[in-house]
Length: 147
Image (cartoon, rainbow, N blue to C red):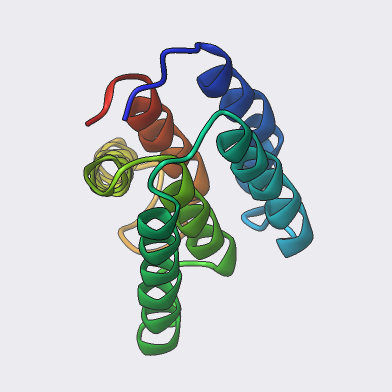
């Protein structure tokens, strides 16, 4: 669902950059910052016109539910910030855009781990990886040119 107005990807970029930088620095983003950032983006999305409000609500709820299940079943996989960011992305892009964003993030994280392991900068599974920056890149790709 690419936007005809270039303002939305720009606002997404400006709102997400502080979150990405904090996640890279500390591997953690406070929940309140995510809720404020996603609230700004969802409000802008609603102001720009929302014809499929119930679908986006269902998609966001499903993403939040599945992400919470992953948190419970596999505690060391995702962080709470990642799950909230994915649920926020579900408000902003289509179903296929969300799959593109999460899939692209997973591929980029895998490539990052392979490169750092191949360069002997880290042992496999030795360090946690900040996932939110890769979600940001996938979300930006879905907003700018995704389905």
